[in-house]
Length: 144
Image (tube, rainbow, N blue to C red; front, top):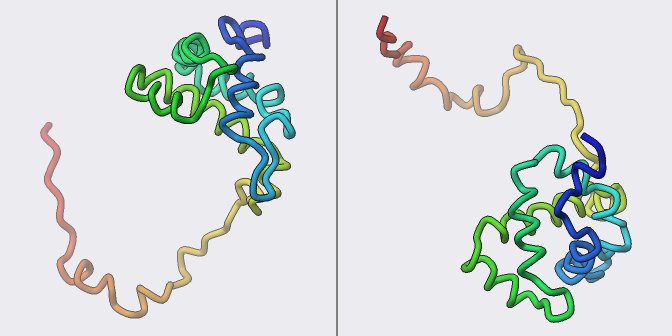
């Protein structure tokens, strides 16, 4: 899917303005526009969640950046829950995909962890699974 396809019916400029109001620079964190969240990650987010495209477009139609407040965002939740969910999900996803933001919060991204199935953890050694082991296997046979 191309960038033009991903952004169909999405007023990107309006989304960027709303994102900056929703996520301003504060407490040492950059604003959405400082990390170019929408410009950099909107296509990726909509690629994963195409179901958000239409309600996001509806949210952008319903909200005017010139008069937008967080109270207006709360009102959108009661007026159109799908539009509210789409807007807040897309803005947050775009923001937290930024490496700058992830660095600020100390999130390195997904890290592969190895697991040794033969290494017993403390709770196994303490006997927390003993009642399950003593009970033995239980299940219901699936109908044929």
